[in-house]
Image (cartoon, rainbow, N blue to C red):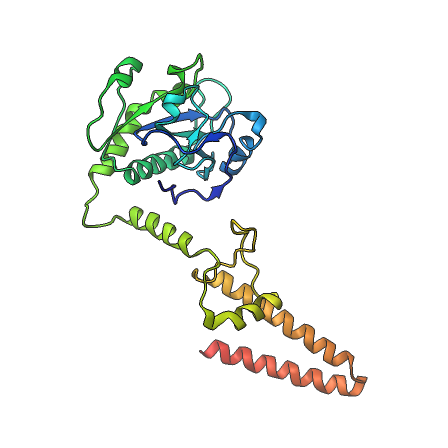
Length: 295
């Protein structure tokens, strides 16, 4: 099972069962009871003493965090049977009735639920609005169904704000799924797949031909990577795309490195010679920058 490429934060909770014992055919949306970011929401579920978790957290700002892999069962709905079948989503909310969520959180929630359904082969999301009817319903091929925490415990979750919008959520997600042409990707689908593709590039895979250059760049501090890989090594993401922001950052590091070496050179000569060398270096740098502008 894959995880959503919409998640920009990953903090896996120890509170889970791996793997889940049933295929995914339910969506269970919860209210977090707090206007948190996805990162903060995931942090809450990190201590094993919490004895709770979820698959995803949607932040008040629209951020999405992965807390438990979709292939694993989260501890979220006070029901092992439900959590083994459902992708559970904690959504940032107010901390009192009706536990409202922000527009950004709601929009991100719709995107996330659509992506979950799509990747798990669903073309239709159902909200039947009744516990007994839902749990006894035999799903048809391409269907998924929504459940709620309050059906399995004496809780208000997901709060009336989201509960009253479950029909709307199911209808909108189904509209999006049914409107997708199997032969033509929508822009939103393309972004999802492009994000997933880039994640596949963001590791330490690289060609032998560049080994010497890569080692030099790391030793000189030009490349720092981002985070670590599963084996604890710095994640250099060698095959990923280089943005203009990243490019100018590397350029600045190289410039700083050159000027530091120039300073060492100047410090090794007397004052008169230093002045001459300084003028030569300044002119050389100016020419190089001018040539760069023209290219």
